[in-house]
Length: 239
Image (tube, rainbow, N blue to C red; front, side, top):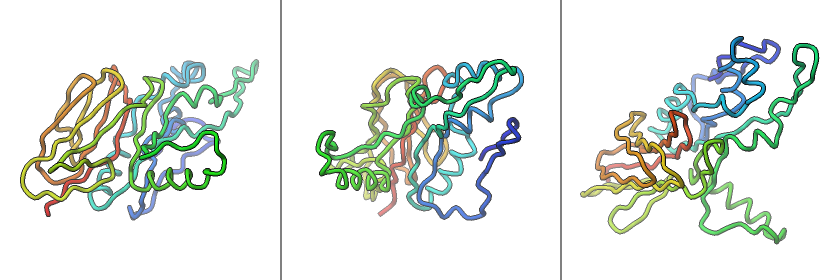
């Protein structure tokens, strides 16, 4: 969904296919937002402080994702699109834009696993890789902008009839309410999104909601009007 107005030598490549037949989508890309938000007045600031200019995923992309996910499961991820390319400034100095050590402190995809991966035993690499890929496939992950705080510890899950459900799961509703729960590692504004519409908003580190309407639910966490964490969906369907 890029609409690039600068750097004509690096044109945008938006999605133009009519179909939405995909199983995953990158909802937040640092490079895309950085370039799209640049103008003649803030160009220098963007170059010097590449992390401060990132606000949130594009609304158009979130709507595209929610629309597709209303029909089937679609996993959302985020990325920095790091290239560490060099840019000449006023013909005097060459500045490295998007240095890895800087950009990796930006948008991250956190994967939730049942068991930790091994950090020392290379023999388990293939098994660990398979676990990560399977978690991504199921939507057991969330996107966070590390610039506003480490997202580690965030959880969005549901409880229904003595069962616990994670993002990516579907709950078959057969009477009663579903309890949605959110835990965050720091105080923030927690927004509950139901079928691409914000339904409720709470401030704090914990939020709970009783719901019974079918549809797809996800959570957004904001800090000082800046997007921080975006969860994947939990789906509720009538049995």
